[in-house]
Amino acid sequence: MRAGQQLASMLRWTRAWRLPREGLGPHGPSFARVPVAPSSSSGGRGGAEPRPLPLSYRLLDGEAALPAVVFLHGLFGSKTNFNSIAKILAQQTGRRVLTVDARNHGDSPHSPDMSYEIMSQDLQDLLPQLGLVPCVVVGHSMGGKTAMLLALQRDMAVRQHLLTNLVEVDGRFVWRVNLDALTQHLDKILAFPQRQESYLGPTLFLLGGNSQFVHPSHHPEIMRLFPRAQMQTVPNAGHWIHADRPQDFIAAIQGFLV
Image (cartoon, rainbow, N blue to C red):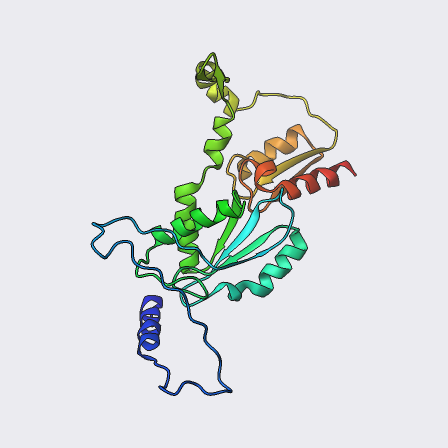
C-alpha cells in the first residue's frame, strides 16, 4: 500500500470510529475537550484569509543566544512524539527546544481551515511571540512539509546578511559596499591567484557540509599550497559556518589552537 493510500485509510478508519454512548468506563483513557475555532473562510465573510491559531506547545529552556530547535510532528501525531528527543537535545546542546501541536492535532484548537499555508502562518505567529526567531525547524512528514514551506516563505538569512550593508546617509539608504567594483571583479574574487611557493605551517580549512564553495577537485591544489592542512567539515552548515553552527565553529577553532 502506498503512503498516500495508507494515510487515507487511516483517516477513514479514524472518522468511522466512535466512542460507545456510555463512554469508556472508569478504567479507560480520559479525553479532554479541545477548543474549536470558527472558520474564518466561512459564515459569509467573503473569503477572508484564515487566521492563525494559538497552538499548544512545550518549550524547554536553554541558552537564548543560540537558535532554538523546533519540532513539528506528522499527520495524526502530537508534540509528545518528540518528548524524549527534545529532552536529550536540550540537555546535550544547551539550546531551547520547542515541540508544537499543529492545528487540529493534540491540544491545539480545531478549525475547519487546514492547509500548509495556514499551518506555516500559525508558526509565523507563534515563534516571534516566544522569541524563537531565527530557529532550526525539524519536521516529520506533514511537519516536514510545513517546515519546507515555512523556510521558503520566511528564510531570511541571506537577505539579512546582505542588508547589513545597507546604511542610512543624509536621510536616504545607500549600500556601503562598492557594488560596481565588486561586480566588475567578481571573477577574480571567486578565483585564487596562481602561486608556486608553499606554506609549511599548520592550517585549518573549515568547510560547511551543505556548502559547494570548496569542491573535492580543489583539495589537491590546497594540499600543494598548504601541505600540513587539515580539512574539517561541519555538518548541517552552509557557507556561513560561523552563523549556521557557531558552537561547532568555535569548537573547531579551539581544537586547532590546542
